[in-house]
Amino acid sequence: MQRASLLDAARSLLSEGGTDALTFPALAERTGLARSSVYEYFRSRAAVVEELCEVDFPVWAAEVEAAMAGATTPEGKVEAYVRRQLALVGDRRHRAVVAISASELDAGAREKIRAAHGGLVAMIVEALAEMGHEEPRMAAMLLQGIVDAAVRRIELGAAEDPRTITETAVVMALRGVQG
Image (tube, rainbow, N blue to C red; front, top):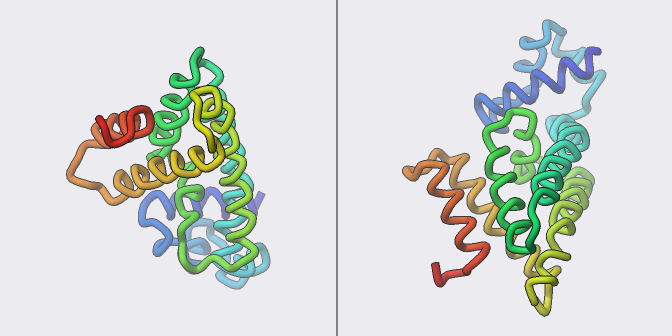
């Protein structure tokens, strides 16, 4: 129960202030634990983010997969893939997934996250192959790059409305730079 409480507190901290807000003193304060007790559960901030990703990434992926399953065309699957990921950006359960780029992650954490991310990218490869891409795996990685850029734009609180960012990302995904 304490571990789950720490993970929930970490989600809240990440939602409120990004990776800089995720500190052991803040986790201790949010959970009512002594700071030394937090270290009994996690060895570092990277370990907290790594575990959040292990717990939350499958939920994120399942939601994206469910959205794609509702589409009847490869183009519809691509659109669902982009839209669902961008819709999840503001959901605090998925904040750890967004924190993937946190610079303090160790090599082991980065590798686990990269593997999980690869599973998300793999979901769209078949649809891209059906659309005629000669290199569907490469196209999937580049498509995820569009999503990642849109996520960062939304996260930064860009001047554009998140709906505008989402629509632009969908257009880029489906039509490229032609618009």
